[in-house]
Amino acid sequence: MRQVKIFIYLTLATAVLASCKKEFLTLYPETSLNEGNFYKSTADFQQALVGAYAPLRDIANNAYFMDEIRSDNAHYDYNSKDRGNAATENLVDFLDASSNVITQNRYQADYNGISRVNVVLDRLASITFPMADADKNQIIGEAKALRAHYYFDLVRTYGGVPIQLHEVLAPSEAYAVRATAEAVYTQIITDFTDAINLLTAPSFTAGQTGRVTKGTAATELGHVYLQRKEYAKAIPLLQSVTQMGYVLMPNFRDVFNPANKNGNKELIFDVQFQSGTTGQQSNFIYRFIPITGNTTNILGVNFNNTIGGWNVPTDDLIGVFEPGDSRFDASIGIIEGTVDASGNFVATRVVSAVNYTQPAGVVAKRFAKKYYYPPYPNLTQNTDQNWPLYRYSDVLLMLAECLNETSKSGEALPYLNQVRTRAFGAGNGQITTTDQTQLRTIIALERRRELAFENKRWQDLIRTGQAVAVMNAYGVKTKQQFPYLLPQTYNVTPEKLLYPIPLREIQLNSQLVQNPGY
Image (cartoon, rainbow, N blue to C red; front, side, top):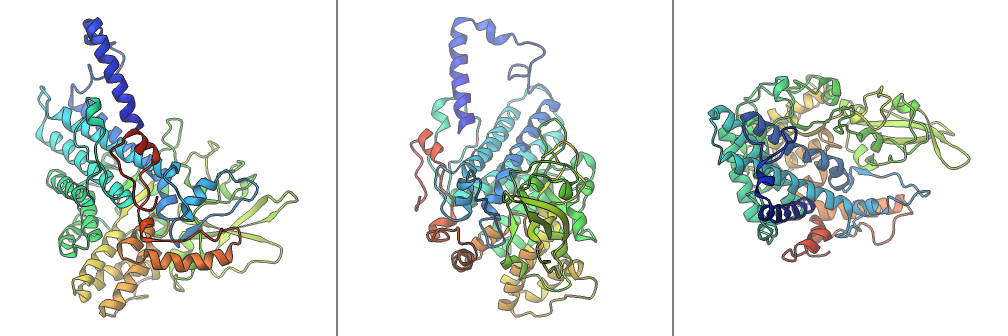
């Protein structure tokens, strides 16, 4: 990991300086933050903990390529005039290699978060100043939940990975062998369990916005057990979340509106972004609308958008929405336009995808409308849009799935129908069957509709054992639809259910062994 390697160099350099001039290390500028004058107060630890959340943004900026567009929910708008995105397209088309920058960025971001958490926990264990038990429990609980979250992301994405639980202080500690996936899961469960016992219930106040709570840890540990098909262990955790004050917002589209992101009782855990000049802004909508020379008719601000064309809704996804489902209009939109003499798309207006018929002479491009809330500021690629990781509807659907898998189909229906009631209106769209096989299919489809473009689909396919069959069948249709796809694309084998360990990590750490198939 680049961060670890840099730290090692700095540590060695410090050791050399220490042998030459001891007082250089013991006298620190009062205006700078460093290990000599930091971690001296509760506020210092709280500030350091905030830094451990920052890698969540780096993951969110890459994950939709790996978890959504990799699935049958979304594709990309092929740009024949600019082939600079070929590496990212290869990731989507199952032609990815260990040198892919997207998979490398995510791996490094996870370990960056783990490293920051480990520093907080190790330094906290050796403090000499008094700290209130409530503050200490909160810091430890958040830190352990974050570490578990990062390892859960790693093990599902790359398989067994090195387990680092302490601050790296020497070169010999930086490079470790890959642990088994089972060992990683054991650590994840331990950390989440500790966090649940230490954290407080959600308060839905501004000060708690974006932070891990008992509800977050219980939700994600429930997801861990669901992933492992330990349904009976997941049920009480997910049921506990239903007693913590979370509710479904009445209007599905309002859940994702940046104006509602603080105090939103449906959001259990989301990645926080903030527009402005601090470098914490998001740009998802710029990625999800088409490539176009002028975005005024889409965003209300003029920008030459060369980074768009990603997360394009597929025919396959559109086909699973039922008539009257309000989530369809909230999730998928159409941008109409024309193509100029140079072959460039010129956007004219945004229209609803409901019952849409493409007019003659009009070019229509779909986009992920779930993250579209104009008008946008003149600071281009600079929005307040957060990225949802867990919502209350996800908990309800996970709970319904676990109950169905433990032969409690009748008990699953109320949780499933809460989600459908919002989608279709009171008294509409209710599911009544208690046949386990039928209900399994219904719940899976409901997750697909409810959580489209939230990076759940690819992992859901893997978890339910459908990924290879579904994606190969989807690949056949997709290659017929898009002639630019090479014959070797969408050759989905079991080895492709994990991404490769990034080549750069293997070059830095000779003890790492690559995943099969790469």
